[in-house]
Amino acid sequence: MIRSRVFLVLALLFSFIVLVTYALVDFREREDKAYDLYKSESYLKVLGLYKDSEIPTSELELTILSQTISQLEKKLNAKETSKDLISFFKKRSATKLVEWETTRGTYYHIEDPYFSHLKKHGDGYKRALITKIVTIHKPIPKAEATNLLLKLILEDPRGMEDSFSRALANLLSFPFEPIGEIESEFLLQSLHFLANTSNTVLYHQTAIVRGKNVNLRSGPGRENSEVGKISEPELTFCLEEDSGTETIVGHTGHWKRCYFPNLQKSAWIFSGFLKDVPPNPSFVADFEKRFKAVDNEIRIDFEGWSGSQIPATFFGAYLPRESVRVSGETGFPVFGQGKQSKGIQRICKKLSGDKNYFEFSFSPTDSETPISFLELHLNYDNREHLAYSISLDKESIWVNKNRYVLDGEKRRENLSLHIESHEGDKWNASLWRRNTGLIQSIRSYPLDESALKSGRYSWEICLPLAKEPNREQVLLFEIRTGIH
Image (cartoon, rainbow, N blue to C red; front, side, top):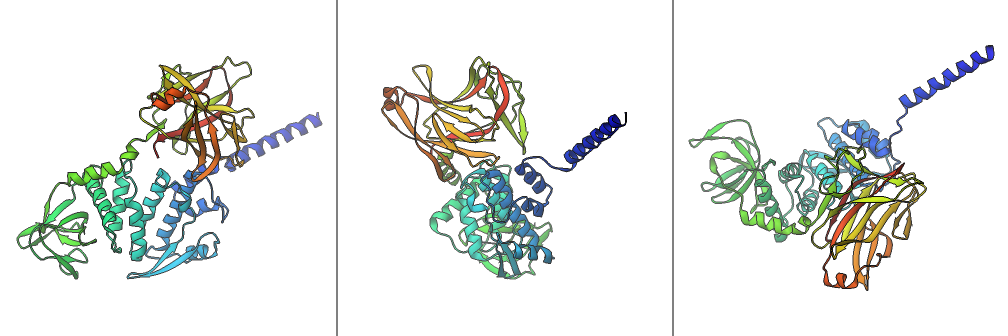
């Protein structure tokens, strides 16, 4: 009797310890923890998740860490600088703290070790760059402002128009070094495009100057120093407006800080000397032409997909499954086959035009057996022909029979298959992680040589669905395809 009571007490104590452990210990993936800590503005705790010199390979983690550095730099340059924060970065070996002397005192700059590892022109790179710019609230050295400006105007703002316009408006309000003719053209194209886009701070902010020798000032109001003069019909883009109303020479209006492209600087001007004009359509057309290659890119994600119905734009025999939400993104689970499985069926998406890369984002699996989660087909003669099958197990990724052993880190991956050329009846491709080649000379399964030579084919992206799935899965987040 006593022994049974002792066992009961021990069992209850063990259960209590297990419950307390689950309540107090966060078992989520590190990137999920980092995402939530960043959203709650616990920036030092984000850094605390990583070793000082560690550079993650996940685009999401790199983006969060880069944005965290920018937010902490903003805190360092607040009205009351935290001495504890300065001390923290002086002791942290992975980040160098630099002091810039500016017209408004010392600016504390943290050299970002994560930004350069982001994939250039990718969404993470753009988000990190925008955060870096919008967190600047006092002048930085002209050379640094110019460097950020040149980076920004090379990026396509579509899909991020609002945040991009805020970043550009903020950066143009500070002095920068003169930029070249080509760069100035790119800047004008971006400004006219954003001024023509309704959900931006630059929408309908294009104007020309009325009058001769109109004063430009360092601040909103005639009490501020004169920094130049301007005459009609000079073009300008207005970045912000002072709330106060004033009457000058019979005109009632507001003071506006505007950017003058020909002067390559911004200054305050009274709105009574401005006349609103529409953005120049030729600059908008040049902008769209410049990013025409991006228009050819197709991005497939699973936002809005509930699980009960086939994902939008796909066709085929669909087997319902539950969607999985991770760090604000929806993943599509592709399951492994059970031992008694009767095979697979597929859902596919037809693609138009030439394609020479397929980029895919996925989470790891614990499966001992490779799970086929993505197939690339060529469609010709009204039939689908398998070219590449991409599979994943807990150690490796497979492209057809080619294997690459992953480093064992349980993290989200972003890889791409580059289609390079065809020899006879086979395509030749390579597998990449950002700028690093993982597998070279990957031959496709045999195809029709005459179809490859004539180009009378189209690509299809297919997701294999096990008819009798087991519990093991690969979570697919996004696929991009286009022409490099």
